[in-house]
Length: 143
Image 1 (cartoon, rainbow, N blue to C red):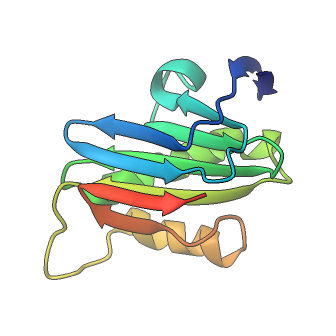
Image 2: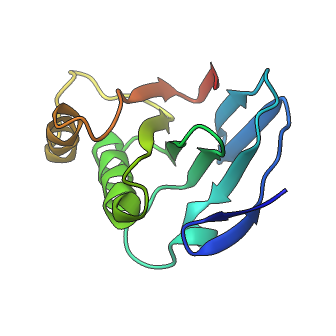
């Protein structure tokens, strides 16, 4: 089904598994209800300049957008890319809920929050984004 999302037209899919991958890191959305979902490669298809996350999944009839960043070890930079993408699209989706997801290859210890993670937490406190989920290498969840 062709669907408009922001200023472009995309074809939605209703596959049971929707995979976003890059350099060994994977986000796997389990779509048991076979909902219509738009999978967007943000840094090629939606936003062409500046900071941006790797993928977005828009659940068509639920006004939900999953912002997905697949990153090496620079978790704070991943937060920056999620925030930048959100800032660029938020005015077009005021009624949407945003679900940020970060998949990194390795987490750093000791656990220190970077400036972008702290900034993200401020945005989240204002109710503009749901809780972030951060996993190493693979993140799998039902949507």
